[in-house]
Image (cartoon, rainbow, N blue to C red):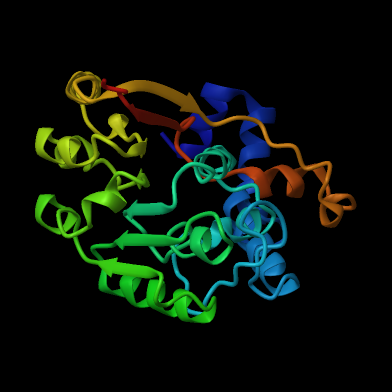
Length: 274
């Protein structure tokens, strides 16, 4: 059966015609789909703010022209909205910790910006991609902290062990490695981090047995940490003057992070031992 007739059969003529017309208008470039609009807004705000974060705890951080990670999210990053849950947690934890460990550092959005903007005195950035490591270095130089950002390739027991124990004990770790967190955080790595506050972006839905992987990770972590979870929340844009005259569609698409589901992070706080 013709796909248009099938659509009419399944959805009714009005819905089928609306869907057909929307696809044609998007294809002709007369209207924008959500991702194209997010990309346009990202470019607009990047130019408006000269690739510099204008709001939030990372205000003043400038992106290198070669920054490549999450360019669709550049508007929300510049406006201090991107992963606000993480920003709030790091801001709180920086009051008692001075070192930041970024596992899966991408182009240094966290690993460089948290140092250049004064949240932490030093960071260790682990990024497996050479392109990412190069941009982290560029961002560190651009933001005048090249001596305070230490760059590694893959994070494992060996590379982590090169960080002085005193700094490990005075650190916060952010782990975002696209589903590899379940293998990476084995007992030996958890032992290295036992005095570190760890925040882990979870990707259990990547796997058919993701629920079991997550349960196993929590069980291992409970030997060293108090384990809790937190989730993505709504965004408040009322304080951002540049959004006042934007449409609702544009305003809320800037807040969107293009995720396939609501995000959950695991937080590991070291058990206080006598």
